[in-house]
Length: 159
View 1: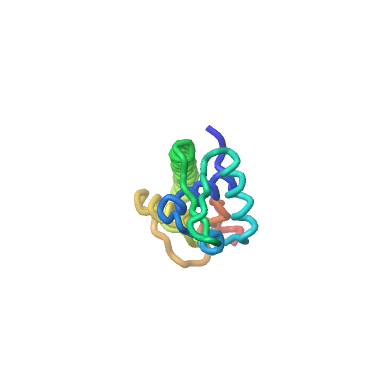
View 2 (view 1 turned 60 degrees about the vertical axis):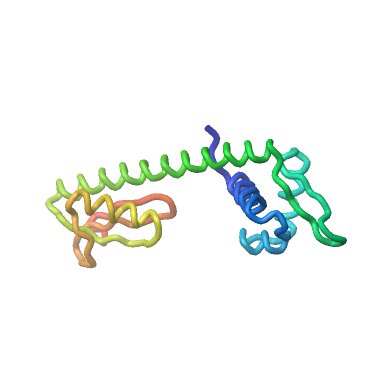
C-alpha cells in the first residue's frame, strides 16, 4: 500500500466533487480545495490525460466533467487507501498514548495535562478516559503534547 500524498488526496477530492456536481467550475473546485485555479487545472488535465475524467462542452464557455469507469475505479482505490492510512495513524497514536499513560501511571500519576487540539488530541482524550487517567490543567504533572500527527510526553520535571 502506498503512502497517501497530497496529490492523491487532491485527486480523490476532485473526483468526489466532480461526481457529486458534474457542472462544477474550476473556480469552485479551487475554492472547495483551498488551492489556486491553476492547481485544479493542472490536476484536471492530468486526470483527463490518464483517462479518469472526460470533459465535454456544456455551453459556449462552460465545461462539464464526467468520471470515466477508470476514474470510478481510481476513486474507489484512493478511498480504500486513504481509509487504511487513517486507521493506521489512529492505531499508532492510540498505541503511543497508551504507552505514555502506562509510564505516567508507573510514575504514580493518575492525571496529566494535554496540550493541543484537533483529532489527535481527541484520540488522546479517548485513550486517557479508557485508562482512567484524568486530563486537567495543573502544574507539576506530566503533559502529553500534540505535535502535528504525533504525541510527545513531557515529564513533570521538564515543565
